Image 1 (tube, rainbow, N blue to C red):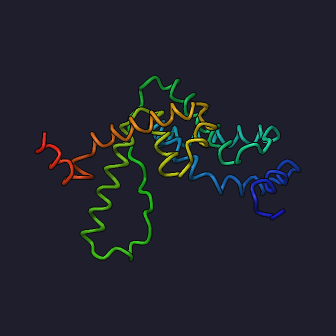
Image 2: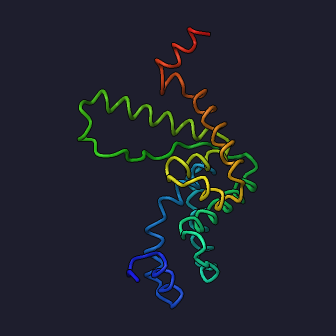
Length: 195
């Protein structure tokens, strides 16, 4: 067994090696935080929920059976913790923008105008995701940013695969309506003219 696999690190953690769990935390902290932030939308609360997720995962680690990927199991905990936080908030939170997500090496961009346009579009998409209802924002994040399959998302959320597909379809439509003029100006303008 390779020394750096999730399963090996889990076994080491269960044998008392706290550094092994630290490696797992480092490996997944950004993903967990991103999913949680897109759902709760307030950075300070997202940090707290992400921390609670790792505490809960540590306390429940012995119950992880390896039937799914560790990341899916961990995302499932994060998703439920975020839902708990949303229930407590009762819609009294304020929205914050996500930190910029690295889109690759800037040196590959041919000129500054192209880079600025991409950044504006990326920022608009992130703002659009923040405008989606919390559960839809989480699903979109898992599917597009974390590249999880519908089946993996179903395991995390306990929603049916069909329900997830419907929610993703509706979320894409909402995003298009919110951002069509910013992300696809030519398509939106020509579509409007033809109506």
